[in-house]
Amino acid sequence: MPKAIYASLNLGPLKETGIIIQLADRTNAYPDGVIEDVLVQVNNLVFPADFYILDMGDERSPNPSPILLGRPFLSTARTKIDVSKGTLTMEFDGEIVHFSIFEAMKYPCHSNAVFAASIIDPLVQEVFEINGRDELEVAITKHLDLEAACEMELDINLQRMTPEVELKPLPEHLKYAFLGEKETLPVIISSKLSPTEEDKLLRVLREHKEAIGWTIADIKGISPSVCMHRIRLEEDARPIRQPQRRLNPIMMEVVKKEIAIAPEDQEKTTFTCPFGTFAYRRMPFGLCNAPATFQMCMISIFSEYVERIIEIFMDDFSVYGDSFDDCLDNLTLILKRCIETNLVLNWEKCHFMVEHGIVLGHVVSSRGIEVDKAKIDVISALPYPVTVREVRSFLGHAGFYRRFIKDFSKIGAPLFRLLQKDVSFEFNEECKEAFEKLKKLLTSPPIIQPPD
Image (cartoon, rainbow, N blue to C red):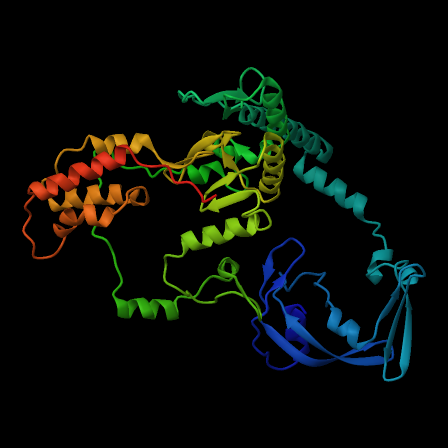
């Protein structure tokens, strides 16, 4: 029921409700409350019904929003609809009422719709004499301006379809292919594909190129002006380092209880349990839930494909298959899902039909999981650390690949002791030996393979 009608009927106070109504355009409406057991008369029948009160726009509108009678009301009235005959039957307390839909649609909704005004022509002439311009001329001029604007927008869209991108050097196992004419819309594919396999792959990518983005303009739902926003500063302005703001534990608990989540953002905290689906109305677990929320979003998009044809970690995912044709079919399913959910992939970070690649800092191939040599080469060239901070940095980088090094904790024990409190920094021979041994093991790590 519109809020304006509720106010005019004076039906009493509203009861609070936490219900969220999803409209046909996928937006959410939040009722002000619910009014229960309102008597509704339909012809000779009187029914009790509950109404949710919504703020449905301008209350002064000459055509106020109607009252919507939902499924609970139709159930109470034991409503039967015969689409073929165009009849609607209601029954309550032994009385039956019939309605003819076809007859009701023959008449106008408003009684004044059948009348005509005979003073339009004089008013049009009067307005023309005051303004001195022909309305037809104005309409034609606006139409011509609109055509010019449409042509300009078409030119802009054509430019977006063929963006200029920088082609960086690629390793030997990768190469560039192009989805557009004149070497436009590049993608990165395996260089080991046969001509037939490459044609099949490019055909699939061309059919689903809406899932691939080459510029910011290809991202649906986000204006490029938002991503390219720049704050104008004075020419001699210098950035000032600010201290990190942190909340003390007591204040953190207050924040959790007092900060309300905007109604339009509550659905982002939705979680499911055996009793139904719920959403938080206040900040539930601090301010650092973005990674979990993003992972949950990705899992919900590809839920039926996870651990079957795709593996996901945050914004990185890998599509796989036992053969080229299987992998191509799986890739087609994933690209279709990306288009359906407006998920746009960065073309530079997509490597199609490769037999090995870097996933989360590791080289994954048919051989197993290996260390990324580009990263360990940097570690192998490091000199002896001279501060505790450098020791911590080295152990942090080496610890990333600790699964490849047997007895990592035992070997690095002398270095870990330097990180303890109240221990003077002394990089002795034992520390040097541990440092060199870790570097040697990192440059020749084993390959992790699954059990047979």
